[in-house]
Length: 127
Image 1 (cartoon, rainbow, N blue to C red):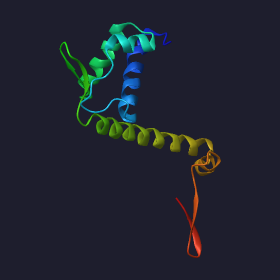
Image 2: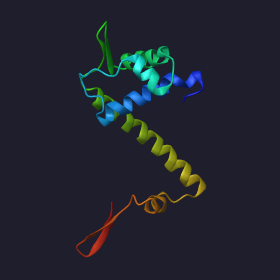
Image 3: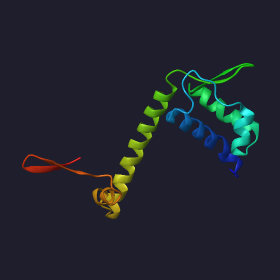
Image 4: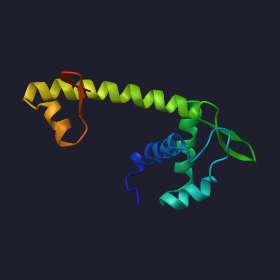
């Protein structure tokens, strides 16, 4: 259950975005009714409406009166591009901070299993 009212609708909006990115809500398809989403996340229906309003302003969702809320065409692509941009921005900040405090990013990525060594001809290159 999400408790703080100030953070509820952006969190609901992010959950809806995640469903679009994962393909659980497909483009041009109707999403769950507002009341069902509210019940699922244990929030007031107006909180869900606020999240949908935010996503409408961002060209992700489209409300059709008396029919429902639909995922707009290219919504997934828009969200993925936006998330990539956010990650790149955040990653630059992380790199700068890690340099400043002496954290070796490459070593941390190896520990996490995210860097692989690929043998090529006589030597090896890291990717």
